[in-house]
Length: 320
Ligand SMILES: NC(=O)c1ccc[n+]([C@@H]2O[C@H](COP(=O)([O-])OP(=O)(O)OC[C@H]3O[C@@H](n4cnc5c(N)ncnc54)[C@H](OP(=O)(O)O)[C@@H]3O)[C@@H](O)[C@H]2O)c1
Image 1: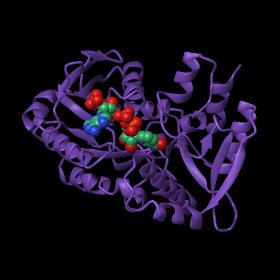
Image 2: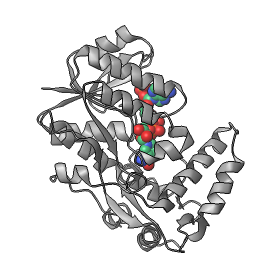
Image 3: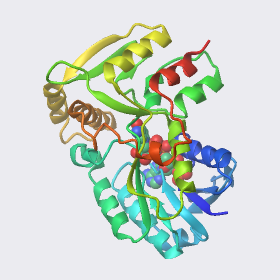
Image 4: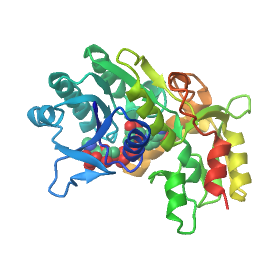
């Protein structure tokens, strides 16, 4: 059976959801995980075999990719290392005879590469992918729907935590249930922008579906959509299903721009993240396809994957 290697597949979010989806929906592919070399690296994870790699060692990478058909990268997009690691992985994939490659994307569209400082190098990685001669895809999904559950307390019910957060453990973006508040971007005309949200578990199903497509069917930009919804509507639904009243602050582009500029040159992680979030929110205000709005390309290519809407997601998470 063709082997799908997930680089960074130890990730409790996308790693687990992609491995689980391939194992449960595909009779076609076998998932394996690539993890950075370490004495404590597990031999198996999420019931998949693990191969150790050194992203800075070409020989190690080529050996780990022996017999692999498809590489899906979900490695953490952080620091300049990320760029080199992606390119090294791509070069090794080519030498090892891999047929398909997807770089670590899974976010907003390509406009984010131009407008979100930390993501600037993603465009260069994509250019290298397109020049590689491999069949490549840029999987993007908008914002993880699971941010709707950040900061919520499910009373120690682990199953619900897994379902709602899918391993997400991040700073709050827009919604903050622990603080009973939300910070919503607002367009110039005073209306609420639409954004695309997709549940991490559904992202895994779409990627598993993409791996089942015949060679030649990957079409470069392979965006997916849980639901494209006005931010204020998502907040209303969150309030309805959680039974909580959130204090909503509306932020306009001017304030976000000033916030992002004020953080210029700062290197403390929290400030870097705050700047990135301000840039994300501006991209949401722009309400453009290629930015915070996704084309449902994967939904059409894999019609058997039925992604959850925001309401379905919240109903499942908050069911009694
Ligand atoms: N759409 C959204 O809302 C959203 C939000 C967050 C993230 N994402 C996307 O999700 C993907 C994973 O991001 P994440 O932040 O959640 O990652 P993560 O789960 O924290 O890390 C994923 C894996 O990357 C590997 N890794 C960590 N640091 C690394 C480094 N410095 N160099 C090489 N490998 C490293 C680790 O695997 P090993 O230790 O096993 O090697 C880890 O399990 C990315 O594609 C990101 O763009 C999307």
